[in-house]
Image 1 (cartoon, rainbow, N blue to C red):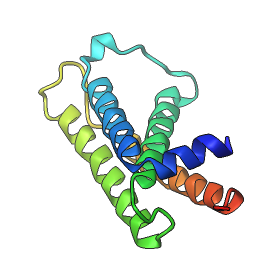
Image 2: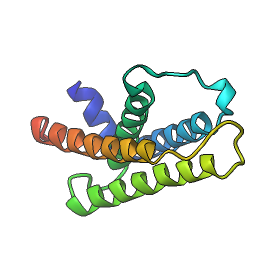
Image 3: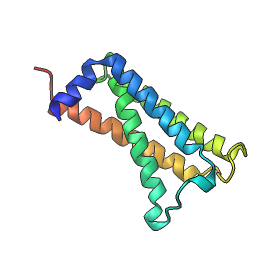
Length: 131
């Protein structure tokens, strides 16, 4: 775990590519027509998915920064992820995507996931300091 984390932190360009690729994956998945998305009704499973994918996104985005331990960079990543999640929800509700609608609870799950991804990243920085 330590070596993977440090590899990600020290390979900024790869971390940036991974975060952009992950954002594209989120964009594609969230803009699939409603009929192509499996229905999950047990425990609001879709909120858990939103939470998880945005936790990963914020984690990867923070790794791409030159100074990931900076509080200002954490705030930038949080605001970026929150805006991205909200924009995707607005796009779903715009009528451009058949069978999808804007769900502000999804945007809230995205935001909470982004916070947790940042907190996990910062915790790992603390647990696995540079030698």
